[in-house]
Image 1 (cartoon, helix red, strand yellow):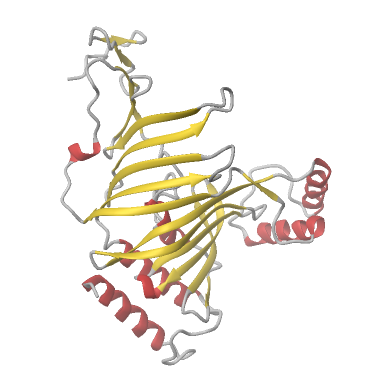
Image 2 (tube, one colour):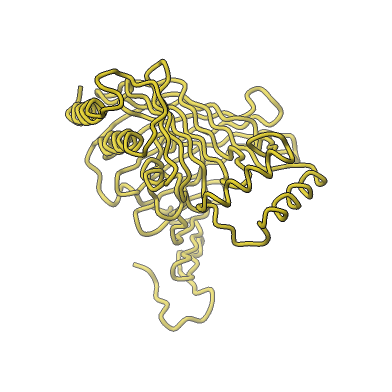
Length: 358
């Protein structure tokens, strides 16, 4: 057991055992009547997450395995606890226009200040501002609960700590299920987390629902854990994405049901429990269910992960890309284009402060 895991276990067992509601039973099998126990579990998740300072891995994900839309992506990845990351990926897919299988070879990186992209097929590069997003929803560190918040870059457990409607339930297998409504940029989301105390307080399931329609837009499910250098990590999982897609007549009925309850126009404050209650009542009125109808965005992704290193020293250059001298490169920060044939930089519009980057 690592030092961090000892602290987490001592913190949780001590805190929960001190509660007059549950005594020394472990795991407690009840729904927490207040936010305290739920906050304790989420804090344990965050303490455990901070044990991972840097992580290097190789992963493969497949969508529609063996089907006409089969999509296979292999990538090597490096991340650190400063939100920096680097990836080199090879994507194989069937071009719907030609019916032929194609492969893309792309490198991406974020050094904490700017984004780099290198496309080996087009022999081109790009430098731009960070938009708060990783290049893919199917990444090992997203299964850890990172990078689900596009603006604040909070861990999903950190975001859920802000929820006013936190609830906690323990199941017979000793897993903790924490739910609540929180701002997970760019949307207010109903979050459902399943926490695995026996696997280092890692998350085994993350469900992100839109607070209005309650559609499970993103579901991350870990199907296998592995101990790598004494630290528990997800080694296999699935990712599913759905979108709100009701028939037109049902959508109109839903809009009328909301209007009858005083929900008209935008913006709508989904952090207001009264607003969420009215949306839930409208869902039940129209669809007799607690969530709106949804369709799969793409076939589910299956993920396999192989870890190479954890908590190794890194430096800023590890999160930057070197552009080959004969590649064209657009620098969006300075609005300059480098000609791959001549190596010269040219301004794309008259700007007095433009200068050739060094």
